Image (cartoon, rainbow, N blue to C red; front, top):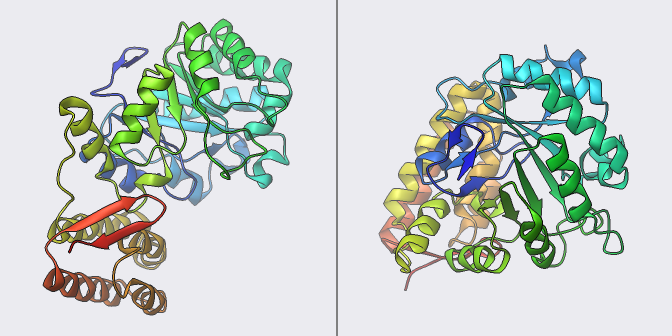
Length: 341
């Protein structure tokens, strides 16, 4: 799959997730098989460019290309300025957020709330594309505002006329949030009329589901978010399955332990000791969910206040898990894991 001049190594993309797709997570997913990873959204408010949080989100030092940065906002001029700022600071692809369903985003008429105002959508897209003529611009949306107002096809036409170079669609409306099941009929309808690449997103949790979504929608690529939390090797598994038709064996406990330790090291280096230790808590919880004794382990681990204590607890937990079994079997992204018999 190609976006502008950037040829991706495959059609597996990491979805932008606030508080998750930081540089350590993006790099890890790319290492384990993702063709591209989109950053967590960066505000279009120029007053925040100097904040430590925004600078960290815009930090792409050493990141495997292409670097895709998502921006969010509702003012065309501010969005254009944000696109230029990020392009000048290393972004090779600019992604526009019109898919986030969070109330704090939609309440300021950003994210998926924009889908209710198609003229504003057009003004934003034209402003951003015009601001970075040398940088491809992509768009992330939902199928519409609610089930009675699915307007993804209309947004596609606006996007194509504005010069958007790829469109990612989550198979739920804004009103759905993350409840219920994603539907792919709308994505298939958009793909049938699209002249730009279409990326399908929503509930892709297994290699089999990945192939089903690609076949059902005829999308050019798939985007995976929550299912990769604590399970970044899912991209490797999907890539192998799509290429061979065979599922690879579940990762061994020793490999999961090693991946987690590398992830923690990157988090500590990226955020600093205290912030890195706190950021790591949710990742450790995701890596260990569903395992024997994981609930009590997570409770105790969340009380720790140093990286040394955190690492010791993780090592102790995984050494005990390795004594019980050499391999874990992942059931699905929602239910977590169980130890192999």
